[in-house]
Length: 356
Image (cartoon, rainbow, N blue to C red; front, side, top):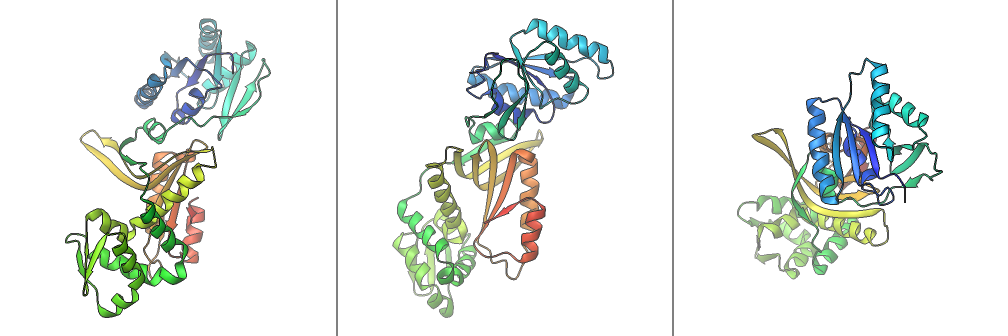
């Protein structure tokens, strides 16, 4: 356990990403001093940071920085801060010039510890006590990781999925050659049934869809009378229209979670909102969200056949949301039942998106 229990942070846009170092069990942090220049954006970041530190028993105080052009005054400021908090450790990751440079100079001169965050590792810049660099513990939840960025989780589902539904989802996902034509037709008719829960299937498709229709009836998600399919509920219709791939993904992630302690939180059907304007919050829903090594992983599931259409609009939307949510601390993955065109795969690579 690291001896200093007061952390000094300089407020900048990267402040949300520093929460993982504050709550890490090895740091034993009880107090955080946020050094701020008083800008409106800083006040917003500080308010969110306080909200997520308070339930963890961490006290957050704000200290106001002097103007950035007076280096002598900045040096005096950090000297006084060290005198007031002689048991402190400096987080250098969130600072901007010249504050970051001069704060490290002050801590180096006073032989006090200073560190920065490198991905999910804490690495020491000044280390008078001989601490080792270490991998940060995974103690954040999805709500923590999104909330500290100003994103409110309004709906989240971690409930286990019925084993029989999961078995069907895994079967469809794992046997592409057998099911891909049936799934394409199922998407079409399930989409047609969006409002009425009912659709009429033509004779050719009825014969082609034999296996998937039997599966839906065995799960009691739909009834088939002649050529007419009727879904029991909207949830069941959504399963047939592509929700099954979301459930398959959730099953795969939860299975991986049991054997990988870096994968600390998994959820599906996650709805978030943030206030672009006070009266008009922006809402988005994600098919899957996970925390791996404290990094936010966003999953978009698609059962659309991209053979005759481009996946580029889907990729652009996913990349924009990933950037909005976490920037360098998030990763986006398109989970597609059908293969993407080479051009779209290259576009995903350029956008730093993964494709499964």
